[in-house]
Image 1 (cartoon, rainbow, N blue to C red):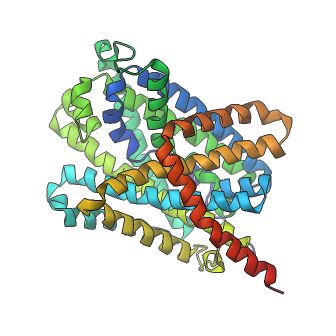
Image 2: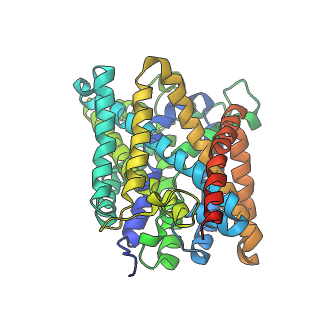
Image 3: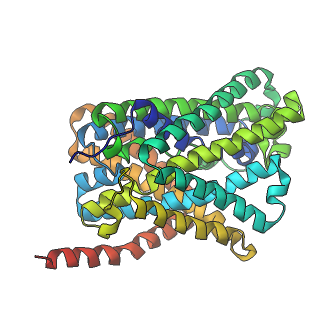
Length: 425
């Protein structure tokens, strides 16, 4: 019986664009404001690095068009143990990011309809409603999830491109001087902006993960990965940079909705409300894409005997139900933890941990091509590896130490499962 492959080129591209463009593009200008024009250098490095990794992943997908994407690349390149480490860390990074995006959705929709998030309990319910709506969409089938993803991607991509393209003409040069307004050295400031901007571009690997559900994966995945990364990257850089040139840095740094404030500054309160609504749609689209991805890596690892077999079971629509549900439950617990006042800092740190954990597949994937690939893509892969290591270093020692602890927690499970597999007849 052949595996159903309901995702075509448009669905796969929408999965990449929709996963990359989430909450980051709308909130990031506030974080980048203190760095002024230095952020433009950071964006140039991040977008270039993202394209290098995307091109390498496109080659890897043509060579190994297997479900699991980064996990499959790491396992084929370096063996079972490395594959498990990537699968384990990436899976946790995805459901952690889902919790973050759900909370960002609540914040965005709350700026349009304040009554929905008037209390911490209402905010939690709003975030969980968005998360479980996307879970229900994915449980309806991979094809249905892909169709919803196309619609949500179009609804946020076109307004974002229009905003960036039009607002760019109203940018004031004074907001980009001096080049480095911080007290840090320029290299340190650039490194900080690279680490920040990466959060807005995570997801370039999204089309490689559900390879078993993509039609003609050897051709579709590379095209969707490269084109989707370029499209999402340009839209994000254009919109964020325009915002930095529209309002003073001090005002942006204190804003909870910097892009909405910039739109209101240009065109009035109605425009600001419109951008806030688009931000909510953007979060919903990213959440839908990441819920789809969240079950695919455990699916691939379970098929290879590295996670419990229940993760590999599919329903009639080709959906790994247990993986979707397990990831959603864990994300829900993290959402609830965020709305407990004593655990807000823990949740904020979880976002940084998610970014650090997502970088590990980038390092492993680019290294896998250098180790197992042909000579044609080695320069691109080497530059992509250098970018990934550079950005991983910029995340900070604390996040890296917690990332190492995260891997250490998963290792006993790996050896336990492998021991049981080796004992089986």
